[in-house]
Image 1 (cartoon, rainbow, N blue to C red):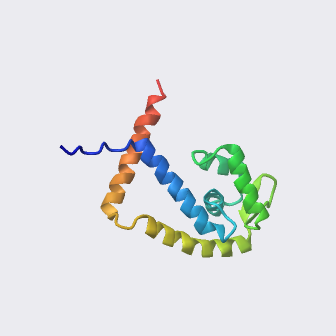
Image 2: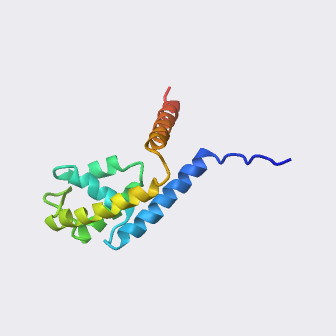
Length: 143
């Protein structure tokens, strides 16, 4: 009698997915001197006008601890992607804006590869399920 394999726990699969995303994204962005986390910092800065370090830390808090995020911010500064127009503020440099456009092309290709064989409906279902799980679990910590 053949046994049906037991499904892997979702936490295991989420960790494996995140590790794979980070590994491949870091490889994709490495030629630009970026990591996935530094790229995420750039996207927060891109979306703001004189973004503060505190805003970056808040928006990306689920992605890394403060020390790791601060190191990613430093990477964007030393790489010439961002500058400090005022103390504790970050803005994309003109060169950073130009180079980020080049990176966007690579990220678009990466995203397409990562969802090959997954229909838009399947992707939407996966996102909705994960969002619901987050809501359920975040509610457990409250009285």
